Image 1 (cartoon, rainbow, N blue to C red):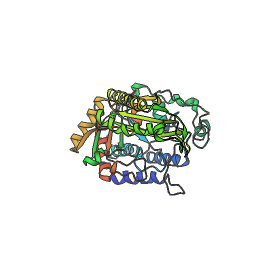
Image 2 (cartoon, helix red, strand yellow):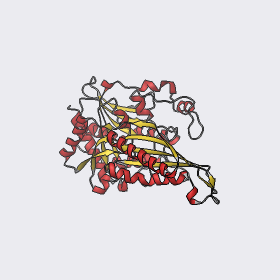
Image 3 (spheres, one colour):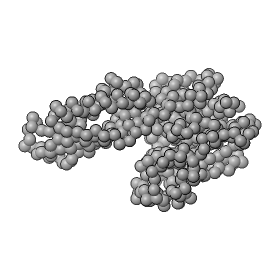
Image 4 (tube, rainbow, N blue to C red):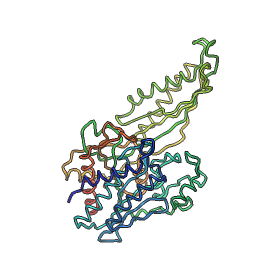
Length: 411
């Protein structure tokens, strides 16, 4: 019993083409015609197998292959089909197509599991349309979604209207919640979206955890003044202080973090933002990610101390406030062990890796036993049309997923 790699690659390409835009880019934005077309094609794959997928109250698609014992909780696998603007072929889609391939391989081989097998396509994982993602998995896990009918997307359309066009209601999203005892475990195959596996030329990563994320808003207050008549020694330039801080971020991460600790300043705004005025204020956002909460706290403390020293030396003031936090999400030990045992059984080289990116698995860990499998992203590139994963690595990832499904079925 083996997966059909050509079939997997063909389906990934067919789904990718659904996102073709007039400007030559490829995007399946959540709830868009392109997204709906891709989801319809995906459902048709199952219909040809005699399985009619269902859509829950949050728009998650669920295709169910019954097992020998319908009373057992389902083994669930899948990911998402929506993309970022001009996204790639593999992010999310690989996990969905791989789950379909496992299902079809079982059917074609006549192998029946004890547990039901459910393949899920989560709604709006990327979140760029409304500014917050993982809506489908959040709803399934009973999270407080913090959404309303009046939320506006990037085009000024109300969430209520957008969902209505897809047959959904904001008021009903919570009805997608699944009970803990309805799911045996959740498995997600995904491209790494980092360069670790590719650099090491290792085809499979057994994910240990998904990084926690702390985000901070920082404001530095100096003194706006004339850029021509204020000599350098009399300046209190908020942007210079910010620049000195940003330059220290990589040094502090290297000194107190580990190879997977990351910190990023991704936004910067200066006031008054004029070519002939010394910046009086600088606002920016800092993000820290790691799999260990204590490491994140240490990096935060060292960066606070660093900014304090810079501002004291320059005679400037600052504020440093956290506005969001997601704690690290370790994978479930018995599921992770099952994935590792499966890789060993298949004699495929592997390593254990953390995930720095968010995935639906992040939320699934809060309710259900969860495990993730990574395959390499060439050059670490993702969220891009240049995202690429070798076909042989996709095949290995699908085989590990199939073997893991068989293994957890006996647990």
